[in-house]
Length: 295
Image 1 (cartoon, rainbow, N blue to C red):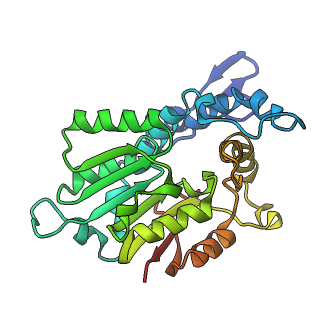
Image 2 (spheres, rainbow, N blue to C red):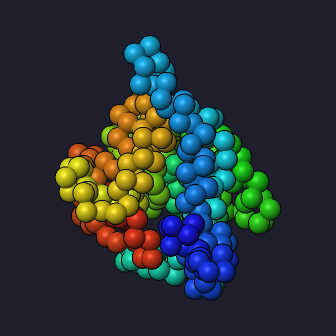
């Protein structure tokens, strides 16, 4: 901690001191901080041997979600910190007209149908559903544990406008065609076994003129374009230890979280989305917002 220039060391007194201005960023629940990253690395270290086994010629193809003990809870806590005071006040207003269509509590004429695709523990849905009770929210994920947690949390909060269900995004129900006004996928598409198929299904289930927000990691498809990104070593490492192996476990593409904005836009175009915009995510520099529309 001293050599990392976090803790100060008095050579003569042989004492250690943590300056006040550094304390907040090291406290897990103190808003913007870096305290959650060491915990993330600890969780990923737990599967390092499993990932290494995948490199053997006769080894497994990937690593199942069930091997990542505690990761869903960590992701939910991080997402809650990112979104609690950000999603409604800053992110939603970047999408023209969405806040009005979701509907404030006093506007009984408003309200739309929303799909939170690859929801994990459903933090976006839980936040949006509380703020916009006139809209209905369907949140889906392939992993049953976070879906069960989200459903229980929704019940605890007394929400009546949410549905959480286990669902493979590449096989959405046939009767969902043209049924959603808005779909949100937050850091979910790059993990999919068949991302192209998932994007086609999201396109199918959107209403004409419906909007799709694909929030994913900031990066470029070409490795050389990421050399000046100071976060790239951590992102590639996390990709190797989680994003790629969970996709490969299902025989998938294994894109990883550094698939890059160029490939992301190309895949959205191939899925027939139009009016594709690449936007910053307010107060979350690590992500980009790919906002697009079904014609």
